[in-house]
Amino acid sequence: MCVNVIQKPFKHRDFVNKNNQIIDLLVIGGGASGLMAAIGAARQGASVLVCEKMKKPGMKILASGGERCNVTNTLDHKTYIEHFGKQGRFMQSAMDTLGNERIQTLFQSFGIETMSRDGFRVFPSSHKSQTVLDGLLNELKRLDVPILTETPVLDLKKSGRHWLIKTKSISHIAKCVVLSTGGLTYPWLGSDGQGYSFAEALGHKCVERHPGGVPLKTKETWTANCRADTIGKAHIKVNMKKHNKIGKTGDVIFTNYGIAGPVVLDLAREITPLVDKYGEVPITLSLRPKMTQQDWQDLIATWKTKNHSQKSLVSLLKNKLPESICIELCRMVNIDPDHPLLAVSPARINDLIAVLNATPLTVNGSMGYKLAFITRGGIKLKEICNKTLESKILPGLYLCGEVVDLDGPCGGYNLTWAFSSGYLAGISAAISLSKIANNDPACSARVAD
Picture 1 (cartoon, rainbow, N blue to C red):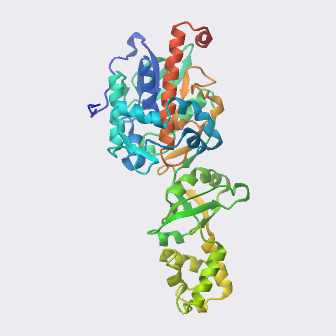
Picture 2 (cartoon, rainbow, N blue to C red):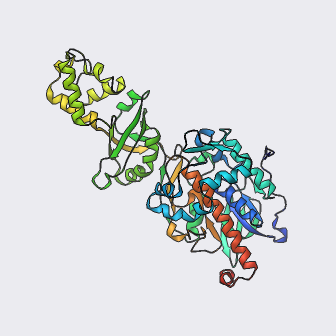
Picture 3 (tube, helix red, strand yellow):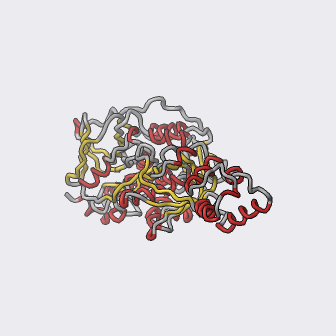
């Protein structure tokens, strides 16, 4: 299917309030979940309007995945949901409606071809996030859905059976509202936490927010001397009694402020709340997780028997780890990196083996929302109907995407949730309105003044 690329988002011309026209659905936020909510509702025949505060919609889509947009992954639904922890069960209906396979099929109908080179992560075949955004906008244009850009919503309230939405230039009346404002990440792309304020003003409660998917700062400064080095398949574990089950294996990058890399970004969503609570979180790194303390002891004993005693420990260790890290670990236990193995006492050797096996670090902060790719926390899930994503507190309000208390690791998890939850919210709103229009008794009580 060939699509015409939209160079500029079209602006709303017809929905003016001078005649008090009532929109079926107004979507607040033109990101991944908001655009999908608009598509889902419009495909069901609802009249839809999207309000986006930025100059262009979908700016976080453009920035995602290093501007390549990891739209989803290839995991089966059960395994995918498990990666969200206990709260993952909430997303079952959204995944049943638009899971990762259906996302790819739907995108194909928008002219967005996808591919997975590693058999796990799914990207647009063009490897350009612009392709994804263009496909979504073209579908919205086909469905005649207007997008009001540079139009922040200033006020949102329920009045009788309708919603009143105030923007800087005009007010709108809608039968339903989708709140898809995102979280707090990448604030220069429009995320400022406004959705939480709206939700709380309407009676919802929010779980405390923290940056997730973010590089971590450490109290120790030696990492700055190793910032050119990456350790593949290192294991990181939280060294706290009540939280010692938090751990993961993956690539670690040392930085001038602490640690980064895929495994750090994944663990950050669990570590940043602990940092906020305790101030510091001790962790250990197994830089060679397949080697035990006994393995290190045997290796050093072998060096001694092979007449390597006159060589420095660093020159021997650098066959196992980057030289800069070997130097820092030696210094950590007061071993001169240039001293020959023979000159190092057995006690110091034991100390070195201990830090080789479990290198200690202390996380005392993160790089914050400016570098975080997801927000941990948000609107409480127990206040949202998981089958429709409608508010249990205020009928006609639908909540989706990053604004709710649900987040996953790197690898297309969070964009999948944005797309699937937005689509479910949109079609749920449209179906509900259709039932009301047909005088469905089950819905008549919802719209009484």
